[in-house]
Image (cartoon, rainbow, N blue to C red):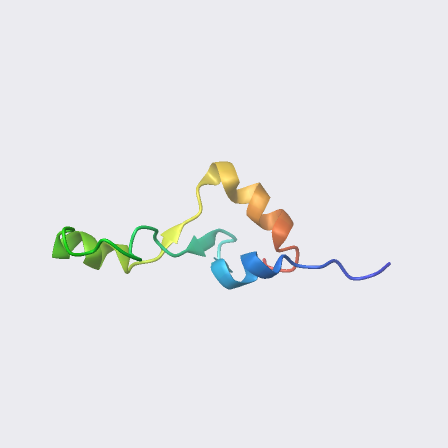
Length: 66
C-alpha cells in the first residue's frame, strides 16, 4: 500500500503535542496592530490549541503526526 500524503499547508501550520492535540498560531496579528492593546498583541504571540471540533479534520490532514 502506498504512503499517504500529508497536507502541505497543514504541515506548516500545526504541530502535535505530546498528548495528541494540535498546536496552532493565534490569528489576528498580521496587520492593523496600531490600535490593538499591547497586552492583546502579547497574548497573540502564544500558541493556541486546535478546537476539539476540528481535531479530526487536522488529524486527517496529518496522518503521520501523533
